[in-house]
Length: 429
Image (cartoon, rainbow, N blue to C red; front, top):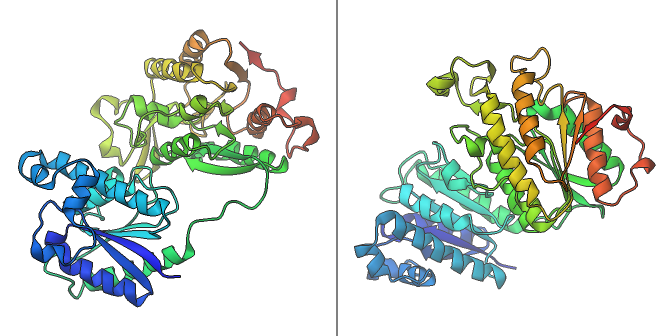
């Protein structure tokens, strides 16, 4: 079976690179379909493309000449990205595309990435770009896009440097297209999303172990902004039967977006509620902001307690006032949930560094969060305080058991690997 790879390029400036990729893909047994996403066109360009730019613009409901001459440049580029996404998704629905490969500078990368973000997880997406050595978060979002730095400029056709990068890109996408998307997990049990940080690792591993013993499969998501946003998207798409949201740091980042782990799209803690998916929520990592190197910390926060996690990740203590705002946002989102919800608070500490003896331990500020949350949560949302740190294994087990109960599974029939947290005193609302 011949695999089909769509090649996205601004053909007015990247015709030679597109032609090179077409030939390389052909050498790997793939058929290339070149889609021109550029705003310039002409007879010479049309001969190099399978889908001209005018067709791409029309797919988004626009006229190419109008976009080129009268629309603001960023809006015109967004329209071309939308048109490309419409075409690619139509091909995907018909089984006529097995992968997407793009080549571009800043403009071409923005258009190609915008189109790729609208494609489903698992369809190969690969971009060779002059800007791939920088911060590509805005291009990738929460999608599974692979970036390769072109090293040399993509100007005047493939050269001694870019030819190697482009040849490898074609081989990579041909291989990815041949491999195809995963055909599901092994096993028949429920599938649960779990959020994690290094600072909540013990809680997550205890919970995942407990769920595994019950026959529940898990997919962990690092609460890095993009990963948590991807989880929300997967939950919205119906992938998961439950959510164990042990690490909700991204909600702090959403409210205070100087945080490097601010979500790439708004709406943390909303997807499960909208779909009625059971969720157990904890304040893992909520008590501190995440910044990059120390010199990226905002000046107003530099006198606060700080943990130097690594050279490129610095954690700064959140204040009681900030946590009250987070509590109100969490309550508003969980109150609107249409499925069962339980919030578990480890009263002694919400992370490794925020527990007793840690540099960010501040029980008074945490208490402000709990007081605000308790006063604003609706009656149908369960709230329990446990006298432990989040990384006490009993806490992870208690959280997993709560989700198992929501899933209608008999918790008593599973043998825990640690003493059961149900034996501990709980403070309930």
